[in-house]
Image (cartoon, rainbow, N blue to C red; front, side, top):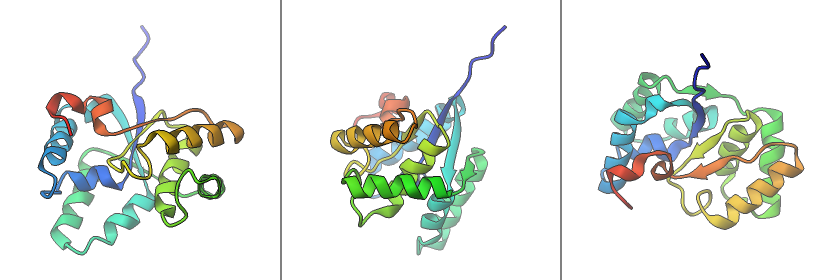
Length: 164
């Protein structure tokens, strides 16, 4: 009997942060419910880039809680490889992601280079938006990487807990 393969889902920094972000209560609720009920349906990944961003959070308790969340859900941490840096440079050079946001480009590139199926983000400005996604797909194809699904947690089952 064939075993169902889980979708390999990359979580950028905004996902783990939203779990503890009381300034956006609906987003926080969707994120918490998603982790409680849907996370186990996926193979979860993040990156050293996300860990570095988390380490910059000034609130010690929030920083520790986010790190614990990543450990509790067995989120695998991927490195920023040379191939990821090259791909992220192309994203920024083409305008898919602004040069002012290299970490956003790193998140997408790391997920793409590691051939993950999808990337979840609450970053609607630079990542989860039609034009960046379209450009990312074009660049990925040019570099020989596949298409990566990009969306908020709502796309990955979180919509049943609320709409943003």
